[in-house]
Amino acid sequence: APSVGFCQPWNFILIKDSAVRQRVRESFVRERERSISMLDGNERRQKQYVSLKLEGILESAINICVTYDPTRFGPFVLGRTSIEETGVYSVACAIQNLWLAARAEGVGVGWVSILANEDLEKILALPPHVKPVAYLCLGYVSEFAEKPDLERTGWLPRMDLADVVCYEQWGVYRLESWSALSTAMGKMSEGKREDNM
Image (cartoon, rainbow, N blue to C red; front, top):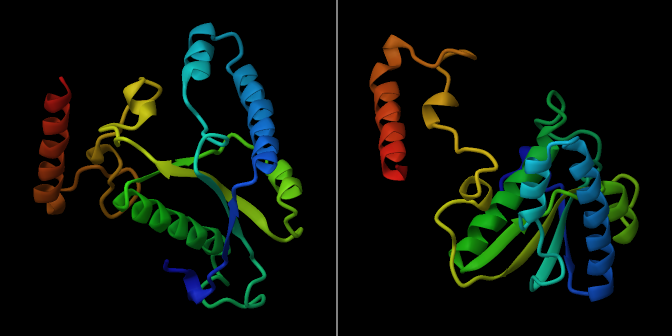
């Protein structure tokens, strides 16, 4: 994966042990309950949340915790001196590459983000300076859904491309000098809306 300053700040902890996975799942259950309480009285949304498949910690073939080590190669990393977060962004690039490679091989990936990092740090015996970025569940699947589950179940809608691309500066969603591109994106979005009707 690409990384800023070729710092390669990632580690991949492979987890098969059922006892370790059970402890991680217990963290998930605690955090899920905490999340449900944040929906404060919205019973419909709480029921929808509980019905979602949000983890596969115990049933997946393997779990992987991807971590970030900001100390790798010392305090001076080319390109990270101005924007410190680029180290974490580099880890995100590695996660995306892993995900795409897995999908190409017919392996499903689920990112479990409903976990307490403090729990992961203890369970996986991480050094104090190493931080968990992603907890992934991987395994072969019989099929890949056409739409992500959260879109399919109506948790959130998919945003149109025309609503997330700005021209020259923030908030400019249409600019005459870019009219051919913005028109094409609008047509692409309209076509997708028609296909979904």
